[in-house]
Amino acid sequence: MPVLNCDVEQARDRLESAGVDVSAGNTDHERWRASYEGATAVAYDNKVVIQGGNPGRLQALLEGSSGGRAHVYFDGACRGNPGEAAVGWVIVTDGGIVTEGGERVGRMTNNAAEYEALLKGLELAAEYDFEEVEIRGDSELIVKQVRGEYDTNDPDLREYRVRVRELLTAFSEWSISHVPRDINERADKLANEAFEDG
Image 1 (spheres, one colour):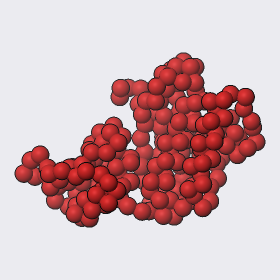
Image 2: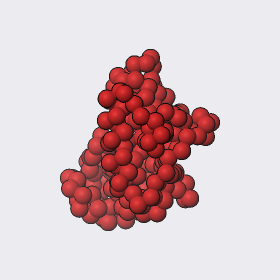
Image 3: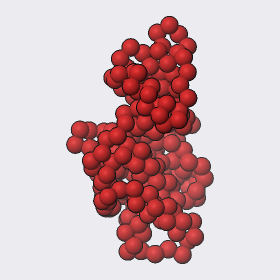
């Protein structure tokens, strides 16, 4: 549950500028509250608490533009192949973790889950207005497909690759690299924890 120490009126203005409905608080202690993409922000004096299973997008809106470069770690997990799937992501800068999370994404193959995790990480990095992304994942297949080193006969994976490449146009520079599972441990853990949350 992210807690943002901030000017709550400026935070409110950011949300309203983004088209998010902001309503009065439910108690005397709440200044205002707003819901967006499965999460709710509650403002108190000098802080905003974000609740819900998907706080990353709301947090990105509240914190405003970040710019600069970010490292995006992604991982997909399946219980069976195909099977119930979940994704995990972590976005990191020199200042530490910007946002992280995991969620269930339905029934699909493991490779589709990896792409879903990558898409989620890239969407959030774009919402935070990062200019450059260095992407890291432990799926060699996905990394090589995105770089154009591997092709695929699977129409679903081809469509995922097109969507990823479209999202990458939002960044002035990007790179994607395969990393060992232990380097991607946090995203892997968040994907697996998402199975327990639902």
